[in-house]
Amino acid sequence: MKAMVSVVIPVHNAEKFISDCMMSVVAQEYTDWEMILVNDHSDDNSKRIIEDFIALRREKNAAQEIRLLDSGDKKGAACARNTGIDAAKGRYIAFLDADDMWEPEKLREQILFQEKIGAEFTFTGYEFSDESGVSIEKIVRVPFHMQYRSALKNTTIFTSTVMFDTEKLSKELMYMPDVPSEDTACWWKIMKTGIPAWGLNRPLTIYRRSGGTLSSNKLTAIKRIWNLYRNVEHLSLIRSAWCFVFYAFHAVMRRI
Image 1 (cartoon, rainbow, N blue to C red):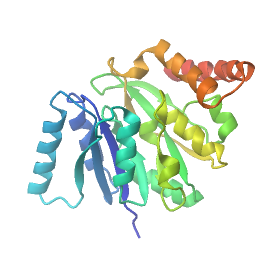
Image 2 (tube, one colour):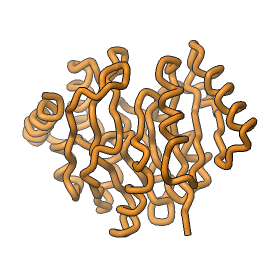
Image 3 (spheres, rainbow, N blue to C red):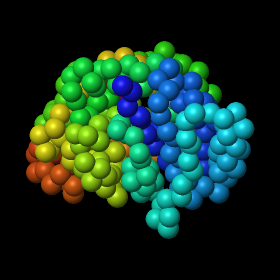
Image 4 (cartoon, rainbow, N blue to C red):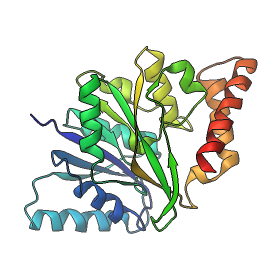
C-alpha cells in the first residue's frame, strides 16, 4: 500500500524558479503526494504564479492536492518549513526548496530505500546546476550512515534531499530552530537523540546555484556553522575548531 508524501516548499521571492520546482514534483513517478507551499513574505510574483498553477491543476482534475499557506508574521525558512510540517497529512515529509528540483524517480527510490531499512530519517545525493537549471556535472556523493558525531564534521545533508517518517519520528522533533543554518541544526538535534540518518547515494535532487541564495555567500556560511558549534551545540573552542577543519574540507570537496 502506498503512503502519502507531504512535500514542504518554503517560498520567498522565487518567481524565477518556482514553476520548475513545482513541475518537478508533478513529474514524480511516485504519485501519492501532496504539495504544501508556504509563502514567506514574498513581494514578487511568486504567490500569483503558484495560485495560477493550482488553478490549472484543478481544471485538469488532478488527483494530488496542492495548498498555498502563509508563514504568518515571522519571516524565515525555519518558520515556513515548520508551518508546512504542521499542515502535513502524509506519512512521509519531504523538503524541497523553491529554487531546487527533483529527478522524476526521487520519491519512488527514496521511499523504497527508507522502507527497506526501516529508517526514520533519510537523505540522498544531489547534483549541482547553474542558475538556469543546467547541470554543471558536479555530483555530491553521500555516506550510507551518519550519526551525530560524524555529522558535526560533515554537513553534506542537503535540505531538498531529506525525508522523514512521521510514524517513527514526531513532528516536534522535526521542527527547525530559528537560528542561522536551521536545517543543519535540525539534523543535529535529531541525531543527538541517537536516531541516525541514512544516505541513498544517488543524485536524485538538482541543487541550483543561484547567486541570490544565502549559501552562495561563503563567509556567511562559515559564520553560521561556527555559530552552530559554539552557541547551539555549545562545543568547546578546541572541539569546534577540530570539527570545523573537517567541515571545511568536505564543503570544498563538494564544490570543486
